[in-house]
Length: 640
Image (tube, rainbow, N blue to C red):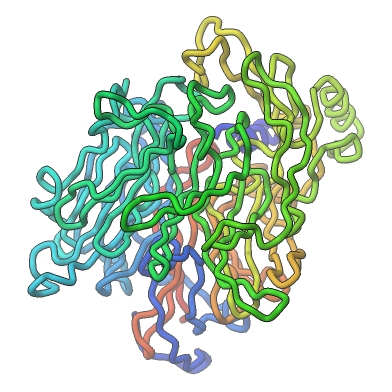
């Protein structure tokens, strides 16, 4: 039982930290052909495909079509690097483009997986914690004399050490006319950065017309004086800055040295674009330093979604999901743009935002006004001296909360046996526990959900035919508190404050979470009613515990879902080594494919022609924070 306990403990701790031949007989003669040109499938981040060759009826026949390996692995004996394979490829110019955690940018033949070219950015990872690259972006120069001219088609990629690269999509060579020799140093005008890896890019840049736009990943819980969370739009041809949004409050004075304001909220997740309305939507992080509010009035745009004019960078509207966020409940996922069908029969341009608290907010994307009721609700008081928590927080009445539990009570405390449940109860009774938004202090506090959700960067997917939002979520508790600085300050030093952040898993003596399963869910939300249509357990104990302890209890999950017109929802994300397909109508699991490593990534699908195959792809390489099996795989599935 000790082996079982230790492996469950590692999984729970990670949550705290962190076109082929033509149709054959039996294959539907579908004529639908759809690609996957953006990280989220399209500018709206819908994670939806019109392809319908793979159906609920034949999905069980899916087989591996090809496998590609990037070679980006942690060397044996290397303990410093923490690689996370989270990339979703894009399809452009009949080519797949993707990246590895350390920014090996790759072009692949989409029907065979054969490598066309690879560019190794070789980033400086010193100071970085989890090292990842979630994807790249494609841009075509409409003014180029020929689409095959040098750099007429470009792949843009960010690196974990803060560079924005422009590569020729046909050859992989750097575009010399972009920035300095094919790259822009994003450290420009940031001010001091202790180590290169403290500031970088983890999500795919956003393309809007002839602009390439990127935010940044800034290390959490580190220092009250950090680089600012500036979002910059660059000319896709030259790399010149067209506009910059700094995240500072409108009333904040600008620095006198020409640099960007420091310690402002950053945008580390993917952004969405509504080109018809000239809007770009930014999911914002917290101002530094997360669990202790930093200097200045930088909470104004923190843990929000901000709509900017995509041509100028001017703020059009903003909506805050967490006031004075001291829990690191930053906005983690790409805002999903969809058409909301109102009760009066009218269609409203809408935005759905997944949050770490487990709530989904649905807003009018032209105005930022909620389309389902949101109530400013009193929440627990407290906080460290001088940084008291907000007295209220916005709580949406609908859509229904996928996590279900908003405050853990003794009725939710769980164990395999009376012995371990009793131990959990004993620990539970020592913790401060006033429900969601309980402020941290010196007393060990039950935190649910943790700062990895709820929902994290995998976000939502949308099925327009069925009017459903699909979301996977994690239901895992933790224990956190603030301690005085002493000795080694470890991962979360909170430099510049009197405190350091301490945390542990809320686990039984057997190493299992102390709350009732499922610990991972997949949920369908009906956007006509705001109600759950169904939810099911996501993940098993396989690859965490030895047989026969492969219980279907749900697992921590990172990565998102993808839906198709035929009525399938694909998802990896779990700590067992599977990618699964569910019926979007019912939630029934219809197929699962065994993987060589876990898939903390979001799947995609494409089809090149009406006579070709539909492929479903997913990256499988594990996540070192989960202490699971490492890999470097991109795997394509298709019907025989």
